[in-house]
Image 1 (tube, rainbow, N blue to C red):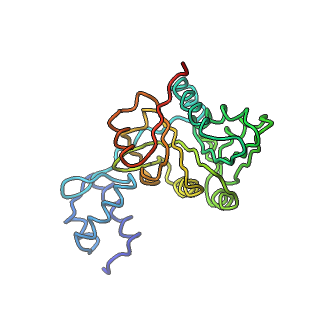
Image 2: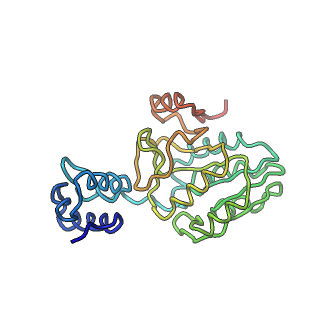
Image 3: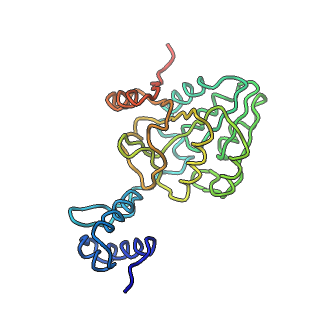
Length: 260
């Protein structure tokens, strides 16, 4: 049997892991007729995508994460904290600026605090955020096209990505499913990754809004290194050691608190 190309080889690796539950590097090397070095590299890539787990000398089936609740349900979870984060993030946006607001429940709270602004341009791929700002007289809303991800009310895919190339913004404000100092920003929905990356590349200023539950987590799909963030807005429940590490990386950290 001739050696397999990378994509076919990785599919065969995944099939072997699914059939056996656990398989060694040596067994995969014989099965695919490829070196152990190449097999280990494939296992690292597949593990980074959340498709399997590395084990000593081989690989195991991945344990699926619990799916994130739909965005409408998440609006009521940690509502007070998300409101504080939304207020603090909105304060970073000046009248007359153009800003991109990504999908998610925390960014929806940012939108609520932007509704009274003047001469503000908001670009979004989220239908719930467009709805939040629909009656705001001083805000011009631009909505991308794209394929609807119903649970997030977000528009994703190549049409959305093409739309993003047609606009310019001063700042990007996004949420993220999981944040790890070592593994970076990760999402739980692979088809959305390229849209996330297109959003992140829109402006040099990237403001990440995230409550304490998102830290120290890793989801299936890698989006970007944590160093890509320029400003983090979070709450006082986030581990101070994590915040200190982020500041050492040059990231501005804002801990949202109630006004006195």
